[in-house]
Length: 481
Image (cartoon, rainbow, N blue to C red; front, side, top):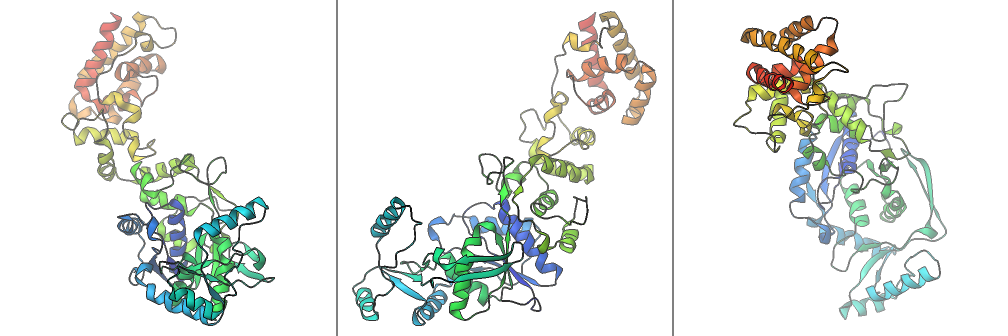
C-alpha cells in the first residue's frame, strides 16, 4: 500500500454525463482540501470510456463548475477516451500472466444465465464458461471474428482486505466477486481497468470517492496485485440522503450544483454546506461557517463520518442567509438583479437601482436566497388594495383608526427629503406613537402594505418614498371616511 511519506496526490475524476451532482462536488472538495493542506497535487481526469452515457457539452460544464468552485488543478486535463491504446497494452499483460481471459458469451446467453440464477435465488455472477478455453481455441475464435470481452479472473476462496481511511478495516470474500469485464468488445476499457491503470500512471496516492464504489475496491485491489503495483489508500465517503434518510434523489431534493446556483445560493455558502455533509471539525466545535481557506486548514479525512449525511435544505437556507448578510448592498444588488429581472412583478422602467437598493437594505437580514428578492414584499412593486378590516388595531373603531392615519399623514407629508431616512422616519413615527405603538403603527403598516406581515412601517415608508407613502395612506383614509 502507499505510504504517507510520499507526496500526496489526489484526483478529480468525473464522468461527462450531465450536470455536476452535489456528491461529485463534495468528493472534489475533499480531494482538494486534502491535497492542498499537505502541499500536494490534485489532477483532473475525465472518465469518458462509456461513450453511450456521454452528454454533449458536459465536459465544458464540468470545467465551468470546477472554476466556479475556485478549485485549481495541477497539470493538464486528461481524457480516458484518448488513451485506448494505453489500456490495450496493459490488458495484454493481464492476459499474458493469466489474470484475465477472453469471454465469447453473447448477450443473449448472459441474459439466460442471469435469469436462471435469479430463479434459483443465486446471486447473478458470470459462470466462467470461457475461463478455461485453450489458447488455440481463443485464437481460432478471434480469427473467425467472434466478438469478445476480456474479464478479470478472480481467485476463489480468498479474503481481500484493506484499511479504509473512513471506515477502517474492510474484508471481502473473493467468492462474492464477479469476473468483472475489463475490456469491452468495442475496444473501450471499463471503469475498473481504466481507473486502476490511470491512478497508477498518474501516481495517485489517495483515492477519495463515494460509498457506492466500496464494493468495487476489492476488484481494483486484485488488479493492482495482478499488475504487481502498490495500491493507493482509499477513503469512501458516506451517502448523501434525503430528509427521510432515503438515498438522495431528484424527487425529493435538488441534486445538481447548477440547480442550487439557479435558485440563488451563493458559491461560498454552497461550498461551506457541502463540505459539512459528512464531516465537521469535531472536538466540541459548534462553528459552521468556514471560508475555503479555513476548510483547507481544518479538514481531516479521518474525521469523515461513516453514516449517511442528510441534505437539510433548511440548514442550507440558514447558511446561505448568513453569507447574504455579509455582502455589501451594492454587491447584493449586482447578484440579485438577474433573478429580479425574471420576476413578473418587476418592471425595470418603473423601479430604479436606488429603489431596489433600498429594498435590499430592508430585506438583506431575512433574505435566504438571491431568488427570494421581493417575493414576500411584492406590495413594494405594485398598487395595493387594503382590506378595511385589516386597518383596525384589535378592537379600535374606524374613528380611532382614521385619527391615527391622519396624524401619520400630517407627519410624513411635512417631512422634507433630507429627513426621509430609515432612522429619521423611525424617530418621527415612534415619537408620534408614544406608548400605544400597536394602535399607531399597525394601521400605518396595513395602509402601506395591505399585508398582515411585512417590514416595519418606517422601512416601508423609506423604500416607497414620500409620494407613494402619502398616496397609500390617503387611500386608506378615504376608505374609512
